[in-house]
Length: 460
Image (cartoon, rainbow, N blue to C red):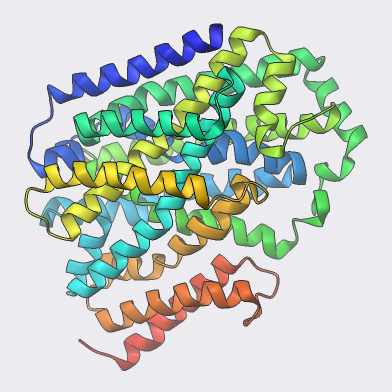
């Protein structure tokens, strides 16, 4: 009963914030899409944080730690904590150029900086194509959580969550997304810290929980970890992947344009790695501790299982709603970013109205992915690595060139994207050797080399 009340209260709060944001949102594209470039320090920090903590964080990450061990913290905690460097290199420069030229989307910045409408469209389409599976994963995560809490089928839960997200994004755009991110960010932080404490106490204390796990699976406490997964190539690959890929998420990139000032970004650069260090380690601990107890669920459901088994009922309700908050805050930002790009980069008339239609359409497409495309055997971690992360990291060299070397040939930029994306499939199919690295990092190398060499040959 408490779970149903918590979920209902949470959903009502989201819709209420959506309606409240309508009062402050105009029909001007810059206001609807970017909150009039007015996100202050706290809102910016919590919005970036909540947007980046997704179903992967609450479900996939704990499941990966359960399978592979503490090495998961090394590749995620360290790699993601380094991301503020990219807030400075990419985010600060994007904010400056956006403020100066009125850029509203990543593709607009890249296309106009490198003087190519064709490049703008290709860049946008790549972002859209690789973000829709990520959006679908958020809905699947919501479905799993609602299944565990209320007994709904996973697909019905996914439809409910995605419908609510679509509703408040249609109401208030970026302002609704950012304001709900503040609510969801605070809830998520409190939930995961509560989960860590109460699960530890339920097992017998932090020391006992660790001893149980070590006795059951000592390989999880050192590299290469469970299944000998963390070779040095895989270790390095993932740390580099988060650093170069995360700024390419359209839901994060669009936040850079929305900042009120450089100070808003600087505050996030300082606070973000501190939050990451604590929250990621908390999730890894719970995932590893699960190896010391009897677990009867799939890895992606380890964290909810541990909380339900060892924590009081109200903590389980809090953590499940916190998990919903994490993934829905990512999904709403993704939905808004995708609809913004499609409406603005395709230069549709009446962009705000058209973006609302597009938002609803994207939701339907994402639901189609849920029904037809998700492979539960791959899990959330495996699915995202093989789709979104590898596909988006290829865009980094061209993005960096657009920010700092605008004289780069647009033909070279196009070649970089096309060959980089094609190489992913070649590496995955075994036509090209990966030398032990993940295919996304190898594709990043291909994209960077192509951009450099092609720029020496072609001039606009």
